[in-house]
Length: 448
Image 1 (cartoon, rainbow, N blue to C red):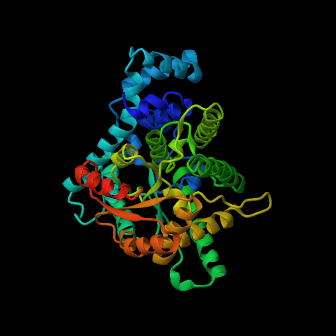
Image 2: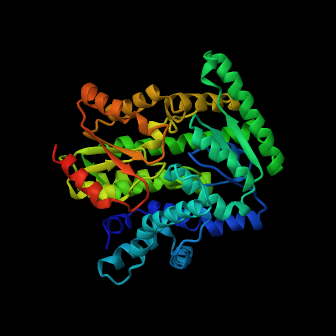
Image 3: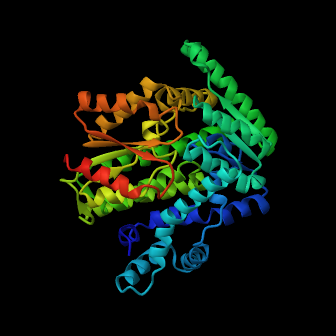
């Protein structure tokens, strides 16, 4: 049984998040066909406007059919009768006697099958003559839309300062005709007040388009409600990264913890298409982690170096966290925090939620997603310092021209400013050059 499955059956919340992710196809079909909801594709973690329009955000890979659906449907039947808590306890008992392989199958498929799907989407993009120089993440997104674009009602684009990303988003019009854009003010604006005015205007335009597509009104109350839900999700997420991730005792082994963080990295992009349900699962996850630590259930990780691997949202080799674990370290995935997407949005009873959301987007753009070289480097340095990490692995994605060029400067500043060793690993596609990466990481971990 895998390291992941052996630990994670104790986390009912993770079973729920995994179940909701892998059975997205059925859930989304029901929402679209029976409830007449509009499905709007989104990436990078910006589902708020879609939820506020009473529609369904979807990170398109969740529309694919995963091999584990029959098993998950059986698990779902059990939970309807027994409830999630009892089902989780039964699964934990049965795995001890090696009677059922269901848990191992489900949880391995969360990672294994998802990675396989990512690679298939990458291959699908290449088969459709997508430019070879694009990075894995953009190619995979191309493939997702080529595969399921006919089931999507619209695509919500945030025009960050990555030229390839914006070209990709623009080209989706041939697949998904309804394209809603939220553009960011050009850097030349300079004046913060003027930039905010432009951002507000751009969001209002996007809201009008969403209202026309969905037939629903985005009211101040609906947006404020979603912002508050999002703030709570972000609060729990940051608690997992900082409180649990920085502790000397984990509620599970470090490889399991990294698997959970990778699952959150993927599902945060659309909240598994149900914001309230995702919030409840995140709340339960942090409670379960704290309870296990309180009871001394887990693993002492005091002498295990804490290593950040980033960025991963554009594609990475998931075997790395297991390699690092076997070499005596622990991996932390924190992309969304480094890029400023886990910052809470200031909202009050009397405030204008569009302005609040606009300020959040501007702050995130300045911190990371705007691809400003100096600000992005500072974001990595700040995260490394705040997490008190021992080492940094930079994931240099082939074809990424907006982030990958910061490594040399980042390595120098990690060493000189924080006395933190850093290394770069190259990535093009999941499963490629694993032996080479393992050898490089072996040499890196000898430093500790």
